Length: 502
Ligand code: AMP
Ligand code: MG
Image (cartoon, rainbow, N blue to C red; front, side, top):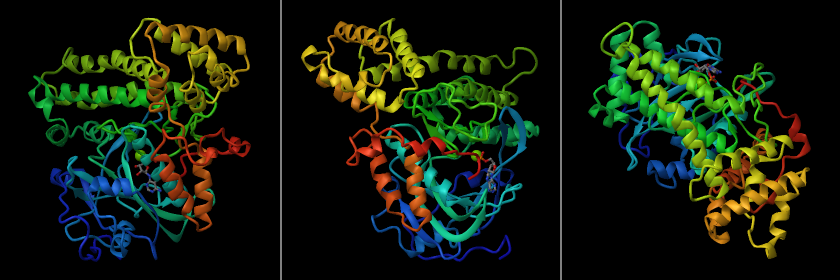
């Protein structure tokens, strides 16, 4: 099939029409082209929760849907397109990137606003560079599960509707097989979309993009004296909130390049991500990140760096030139310096079950994190056990499970004494606080070994574990039926490595 022969259209479909407001931006922003689908596709998994967001019926995943979501057909009205963007990768200008293996199919109108549908892994585009336009089953399962897991944790994220697979071989370090993930988000616009036009001095389309984005996703900025500065401030605040949530749940993104930063403050582009097991602030989840640029503890600063790159790209849109012209953008950036620590402290207070705000809370949480780091104590398990702690001396047994995690019991006891005093100071009631803490400190996160278990079974043709794990991850604050889902990682997990290869 040539690149320009349209795909066959299949009748029906769960949505009546497929508006595509992004396409209205015009040809500077994308290339329209048909997907190159998967031969003889099969379903790997679907997310009923994501389908519900779209308002689709329970039986939406029929044969026609399988062909459409594998890139072999379209529903009438879909106009697949790949968008162009650029960006900074690992701190260096990387030039033009773009949707090298993603295609926007169109939008679904929902009560929560329009949601875009995007296929990832449906073939080459003009922006594929050295890539093959494919995604492998392994990384598709990781993206699918983590997108839905993050949403269930209350962390803004692109969603995942489905994975389809095929026997089509794809070369990575070894031979693997191809899959397509259908991603869902109000918009997939990245910092890199703005950087692209700014870098090439294309100020007219740059302005059009800003106008479009503000009108669609940030209309309140139109009331500000400088809508572009108001937009930057909004992105600064959303990004600060997002990264605070990542830090609070022990999530490492792994590849925080500016092309992987969402203008909506969503977690986007799941690759070599990881959740902390033993708490190590210097943890680098991406095996390809030799400098540790995207280490867990560096994420807040990297986000700030990325926001600077975005501000730089927006600069040509401000009136006036020369010294001082960029002041409104610098002021918007400055907001991060207070917004991020405030957002993080709010999350940490919640993790500690504290309602009131007190000066000493910062030191109390810092000191707990220091203790966790000193002994590489499991981050998720420690906070979950903290959620059961009792202030009633008669109930001391409930505290032993937490205390047992610490080699240095005396150091823990000293901290726990301060913590109990702090709880007493706000007359914290055990049952209420424990319930609050269990709703903020998850029992289950998508640790690498959990994903790996589902991947290995799927590679052997059994997709049951993907679906089982999805259900568990959609209720991360409940004690899982299988205790292993919430347990320490097994020894074999120590040797798991995830890299940019996906
Ligand atoms: P990432 O860091 O994985 O988000 O990707 C960076 C850039 O490489 C984006 O422009 C992707 O579209 C592109 N890319 C990654 N993998 C592939 C692939 N297998 N085929 C084509 N393009 C790819
Ligand atoms: Mg990317």
